[in-house]
Amino acid sequence: MKMNPTICRIYWSFFGHLKPPYRKVLKFSKSFSGSSTKSWIFQSFTLLLLVASFICFVVVMGSSYYFLLPSSETVFKHEVNKNANISEHSDFISEGCNLFDGGWVIDESYPLYNASQCPFAERGFDCLSNGRKDKGYLKWRWKPKNCEIPRFNVRLVLEMLRGKRVVFVGDSLSRTQWESMICMLMNGVEDKKSVYEVKGNKITKQIRYLAVRFSSYNFTVEFYRSIFLVQPGPAPRRSPKRVKTALKLDQLDGISKEWIDSDILVFNTGHWWNPTKLFEMGWYFQVGGKMKLGMPIDKAFRTALATWKSWIENRINPNRTRVFFRTFESTHWSSGTHQNCKVTRLPLSNVTEKQSSSISDAIVNSVKNLSVPVKLLHVTPMGVFRSDAHVGSWSDNPSVPDCSHWCLPGVPDMWNELLFSFLRSQ
Ligand SMILES: *[C@@H]1O[C@H](CO)[C@@H](O)[C@H](O)[C@H]1NC(C)=O
Ligand SMILES: *[C@@H]1O[C@H](CO)[C@@H](O)[C@H](O)[C@H]1NC(C)=O
Ligand SMILES: *[C@@H]1O[C@H](CO)[C@@H](O)[C@H](O)[C@H]1NC(C)=O
Ligand SMILES: *[C@@H]1O[C@H](CO)[C@@H](O)[C@H](O)[C@H]1NC(C)=O
Ligand SMILES: *[C@@H]1O[C@H](CO)[C@@H](O)[C@H](O)[C@H]1NC(C)=O
Ligand SMILES: *[C@@H]1O[C@H](CO)[C@@H](O)[C@H](O)[C@H]1NC(C)=O
Image 1 (cartoon, rainbow, N blue to C red):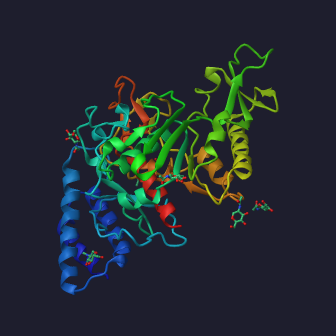
Image 2 (image 1 turned 90 degrees about the vertical axis):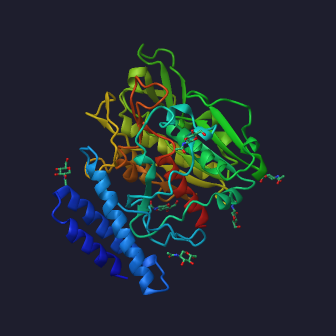
């Protein structure tokens, strides 16, 4: 199956006189087409020739389209939807394939839903409705290096979730994934009125609990806001004045009992573990009833994760509940402060610096060797590329640009596709 690259090479030699960045794109496409052709099954050689030429043509035209746009970014990986024929039923996640090692490829079949038609996509994340004009950011799909994520099949997933309880726990990034999942699934439900928030609540930033019921499928998708996972409380008497809140690192959030009887349980925490959101707001750590004013944040974070770990091992029944932990969701603030946020038109090509995060490293270590299996949703490396996919100024508050949250539809949809693919592979 080496025909595809060979034919592509003809196009490359044709365009070989173009400027260096142009060649770089073509090289990316080439290395990509070499590895993913294996899964193609063709009945005739002629068909193969035709399809391969067509793909190369579209790759090249697509690349030139992007490079003619005025843009200072380089393209990461350009690829036309070659895997459009990904089977919806076979399991493409082979043993030993690292789903989180890969690249973003263009796929015209995306996005998976229209946020302005989904009552559970909050306005602040619906970038198109808030005035974003470029739409290229909607067209990227995550492609692991050595395998395929099965194509999202809404009917299959709706059936898979029948009678189940899905629970998201964490900060606003969990709320985004919760909204994304509901919108993805609602597309497959004919009677939209059969999907509703159980108490008729509206989505707000501070709300502690939201539950959306898919009544024709008898399941709920719930969100519990718990930004640190551990329990905050009032400052003990005789604490220094600056202490307003004691974050009890050895005690899981009081609402955690609500998380126990779930079938799918997805955690995150991370964005609030920084001095601005803790110390500057008067939040300090407490362990064993004693304030630990000098405790560094990374140590406190590991202590909280140890508390989470022992709660999982003691309270969760692995025969019922599938547990996931999402790692740090990349941000793209320039100059390291929350001041500058420039959303790009295209994903980044050079991401050498921000591939790792100490928050993610701590999470990766803490999910190892648990008596209850915990699947890692290691979204850090894939998010690093997506400087094009943040809310930016297309939020409900354009005066405060946002390079932490993501537009919907967008990157959080891919987190859900990964989650569904894990569920399907069991
Ligand atoms: C796509 O899949 C279908 C069904 O599996 C198969 O019949 C068809 O030949 C495939 N097409 C291509 C282009 O691979
Ligand atoms: C989404 O739906 C709205 C309202 O129905 C419509 O105006 C808009 O064109 C749609 N957007 C896309 C990208 O299809
Ligand atoms: C809905 O799901 C629950 C939990 O799995 C189950 O106990 C109940 O019987 C289901 N109800 C219907 C009507 O299927
Ligand atoms: C889980 O299932 C296994 C095998 O069916 C059983 O031995 C074990 O006791 C169950 N564990 C719990 C916590 O129910
Ligand atoms: C990628 O970024 C690093 C650090 O910013 C830089 O040293 C390197 O030259 C860049 N590589 C490319 C190919 O642009
Ligand atoms: C994993 O956990 C078991 C018991 O829970 C322990 O005996 C073993 O040493 C642990 N392994 C590692 C590598 O931590």
